[in-house]
Each structure stands twice: as C-alpha cells, then as structure tokens.
Image 1 (tube, rainbow, N blue to C red):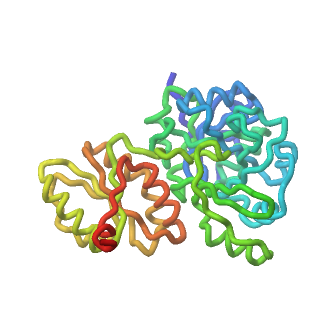
Image 2: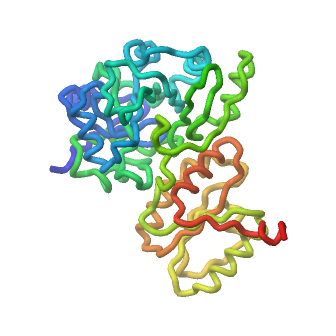
Length: 356
C-alpha cells in the first residue's frame, strides 16, 4: 500500500496534520518527515518492533546505528547514562540544530537502535515540522534518512516516495529541506570532542564554542561503521550510476575534465561542478548534462543542491557523473565527505607530476 502524503506548512505546521502523523508513530508506524538537514524516516525509538521496521523498510545494515531525535534537550534524561561537560556545552549552544551527540546509552533505548553498541546518537532538530511531530508523539523518534540504504539522501518528499513509497505509512511533505546534508556527528573521549561525521554544523563553529569554554578543538577522525554513528560506511550516499570524484589543483582538474569529455563525445555524462568550473568548460556538448553547485565560495549552496542534483542526473539518463572536491571550509567539508563516500572512483590529478 502506498504511503499517505500529508501536506504540511514547513513554518507553521497545522496541528491536525501533525496529530494524525503522531498517532501513526505512537501505534508503531513509520512516518517520513522533513528536518533541517534531510528527510528522516521516523519510528518510536523505544519500540523495538518499530525500530526493526525502519531497518527493514530501508534495507539497512543492522550494524549501522540510527539517530534518536528529541523535541527538547531536557528529554535526554532517561536515554543516556551521562553527559560529559563538553556535550552539555555543545547541546546548550547548538540544539535545536543539526548536531548529533554520541553518548552512553541508557537501558531504556533498545540495543537495535545503536547496533548493539553501548552508545546512542541523539539530537534535537530545529525544523518546525520535526519538532512539532516529536512533541506531539510524546516519544523519542529514531530517524535515519528516509531513503533506501546506501542511496542518495532525500531532500524532498518526492525523493522519499521514489525510494520508500510502498514501504512506509505516512510522508509529511514540508517542501525541500534547507541544509541538504545530514547533521554533524560528534563523540566524546573524556573531555576531547571527536568529529565522526562532518555535516550541517561546521566544524569551525564547534571549535569556536569549545575554545571559548577552555576545551581543546575537536578532532576529525576516520572510522568504520562500528563507531556509534550512521553514515560512516566507505560507500554511502551513492547515486545509481558511477560517480568519479576528481581531486587536485583546479587547473589540472579542468584539463582532465576537458580531455575526458572530448574523449567520450557520444556518452551522456553528468557534471556536478561549481559555477566557476562550468563557465570554464563552456560550451558543453549537447549530450552532457550539468548541475551547478553554486560558487566555490558558498559551499552551503552546494550542500543544499548536492543530493537533488545527483537524483536529477540519474533521471536524465546519464551513464557517468564527474564531480570535483570542494574547498574543505565550512560546509565544504561535509560536501567533500558525501562526495567521497558516493564515489565509485577517486582520481588524484596533477599530484603525481608535482611529486616526481
């Protein structure tokens, strides 16, 4: 049976619509809803059967934890065993918002939520629809992204329906999500903050907040999927067609792209590039399809457009997608992370010659 689609105002959601969706959550059903990052697939986090339905609907690997969403940070109490000092600081500063904290899990949280790990990933979203839904449901809501596991994350209700339309109960359609990439995820080792996944809260903002309180800046690490955080698999967020990510100096990247496009004039190739790069490559062959990701100086535009652009290129029948690494500042770090995990191949251009 197809999911019911309920239209909802993203700024002032109608209480009656929210109440209908909240009743589905309380009854053990699954509701997809917009957050400030991407659409989440929500189920009652303290109902193990509902959490199992989330994993089944997505085809999600049971070793990959999901994030528990709360209406208010005061609701943390019976979900975690302790709250380190830097976690208290970050929660007070960045909640509600796109920051996830990995904390010691209390017994009330089913082990399935955390893939059997002793931690639980939690956050308080800032999107009005998400906050209203969780508050009305009266339960913490486990909500990974509302897409098939490993696929491109959904930033519109249409993306959710394309992946999960016959697997879930309700979709709250609140329009496109504003950030476009998932939350930043941090864990704690004593008083040290460790960034497990860069996301919609820039690492620079975390650094400033911690420094003001006398803590060390966060440490960015590479970890496998058993790090207590979702979205850490080596291949993730991937389109259905191969994506090749180019890294290296801009001039060499453009030279490589010109040669690659000239060598394949009859192939329909998709391009995920900055506005500046697309201007430098213009004019493109009619067969090729481009999606501008905005100016290189505004990575927040690339973050907002990235996943939708991947899906649009798929729909246009491209055989291959080329993308380039953004500058790793601000949200550029999150965009670079998603592209690296989406890529079937990463090509380093210009660096071999420089080092020879």
